[in-house]
Picture (cartoon, rainbow, N blue to C red):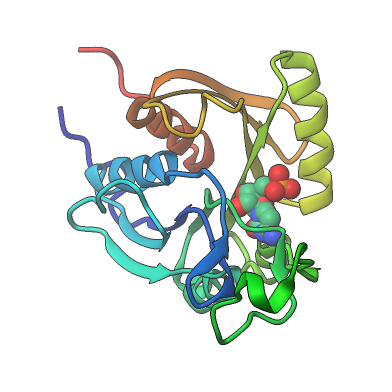
Length: 228
Ligand code: C5P
């Protein structure tokens, strides 16, 4: 079935995981594959939305019909999003952003000979991109964040998610429980979506594409498609 219920809606999605350079060949990264963010972009596109994807090291292909801007470091992700934000009705911040970067990346490959027995890296904090986007959001734009927590208990997940939503100020936060071996790479996901009051507005479990549809329903305020 095809419904074009998001035709005319402009959606900006970030997906993947940023990499912070240590030297020309090494980086600090994370395990995000980009699957859930890409699924949101694909689902939105399939429903007629105009989608821009800011992609950081995706392990999955970019969906057809989605305008894509490739980035690597958190600073690049931030500038791309800041540039695209004014033209979006909904911003979905699904990328896993490095919280820290190497203060001064080496312009030459660091060798054992340079460092001896131990190597210390000076790390400095990256800005919270989501919090910044919340501050600069134009009137009426909805900003959606994600919170992946390594907890299995739903009450604890919700407690942390509500606190995180307060801190970031996002209009919606998508909560999911991740572990070392699940959440990031599998094609299935299970999420709870909370709104600005901390109320649960959707729960979804299943493959990342159907979870994406439920997230889009919740954040765009559209009713879900009746089963056919
Ligand atoms: O605090 P935590 O990293 O769990 O928050 C996750 C949410 O914040 C995600 O939406 C992520 O994209 C966003 N984030 C960000 N900038 C950071 C860290 C996280 O935008 N430096």
